[in-house]
Length: 189
Picture 1 (cartoon, rainbow, N blue to C red):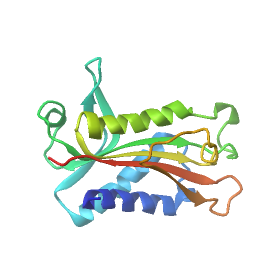
Picture 2: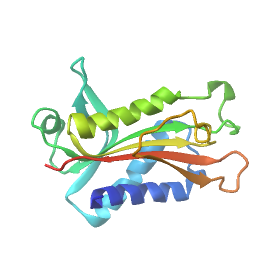
Picture 3: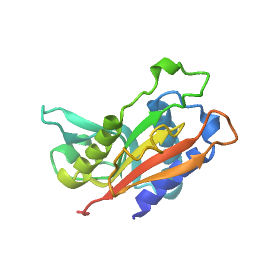
Picture 4: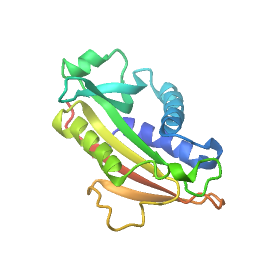
């Protein structure tokens, strides 16, 4: 993988290392926390790249643009460069977050937040960015499952580029964090 992927992966690892301190409620909390760490890490090593949340990286069938939750791109590249001129973002990431059913600060009747088809939809979107549209050099689909609701079920089929990672309980009675990470690398232009 590339240096950009390593910077993204390191930022993500830093966030996951202190997972219980963040108390994520929604997917956007996770994206924002990774984004803040990613910006700090990018600024520490390079002034050539930046990151954005909800950056358009593909056109949908209806003509609207599809935005990735988080992207890394060279400074100066704008959405029109990616959508109309064929430039690529360095990395496009999609996130899903499923809170633990054991958390006392989240209503159980709201869970599960996502169905398995939603998680597969993110993987398909990343494949679209990297393989079909070629608007991203690297695509990452990340599913954080706080209680391992989906990780132990053999009925949930995943791509060969996907891997479950167990991050543990963090000495709590309400966490059993599993992460499904799918990483695709396309052809660089």
